[in-house]
Length: 116
Length: 110
Image 1: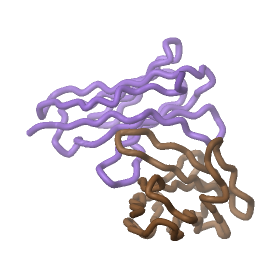
Image 2: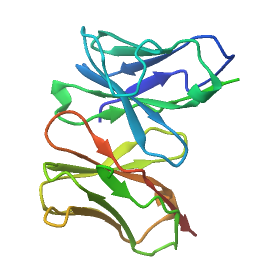
Image 3: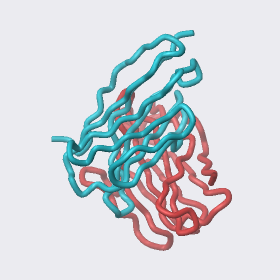
């Protein structure tokens, strides 16, 4: 199956700093990428959907100025958490889809963000 | 009311048991139904998918969809310790947005 990577897998940062998370589709072109947030024992919460070359569409309640998403190429999307605070600590997961893989979303391994 | 409801468990069974995992949903427009398995600190991986109503079998796994009741199930036969994970149901109506359940945590005890 298609492979999606995320980097870093874990990051610890201080409150007020910014953190960038990368999501890459390794063996297919991802026309659409999704960013999710997952709290312990909770479901995946969709944050935003991005199509290559377009601005991301954010879900209601997600601050677009805080969670900056860039999908500049068909294999890379980035999520930048700006001015991070402890409440931003969470597990962030990306998924990627594309015409070559049909309807399916392929998930990355996730990034554990801890803000101290 | 949430779009998708799933009992979070946790569910603990002895090795070899038959496991039944379930989700209910409210949107009758959902057409595609998926089950994902997520190991601890990992991203979800697709386990089974079904289009519309009916059953689908893959090895020890069987997915069932009952659209009239808005109810889907995943059965795991001869459960193994390696099946210990969180199982998420997901559905979509045709667009590219998935609606996930909260996930059910399963532990299979050797």
